[in-house]
Image (cartoon, rainbow, N blue to C red):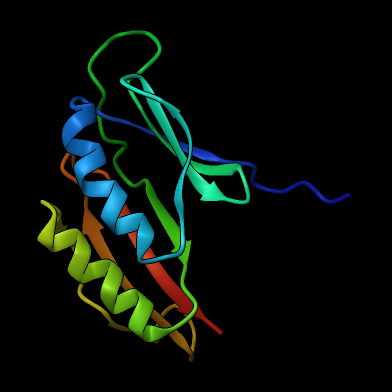
Length: 128
């Protein structure tokens, strides 16, 4: 079996605000809460497997944003990328590169970048 990515976690300073953002945004990509340890951590995924976590840091120190780090989510269509971007902006996210082709990433790459309420950079992309 080849090594693969099991899950990714991002810290937050305000769990309530983060969940108000991520609940609708993750839905646009077909992900939902599959594990909920509120108010400490929530895992989003499918079929009971959390792929993406939002959580308070375990060391109880304030969460900070990693410079140069971003999380990219697979999308199934350009419309899904557009919906991801629109939902993010409607729920407190900040545009960091609107939906569109990204020819530097490949001839068929379509993506959108946003910053969540904590400043983490996330992306939805279609790379067929």
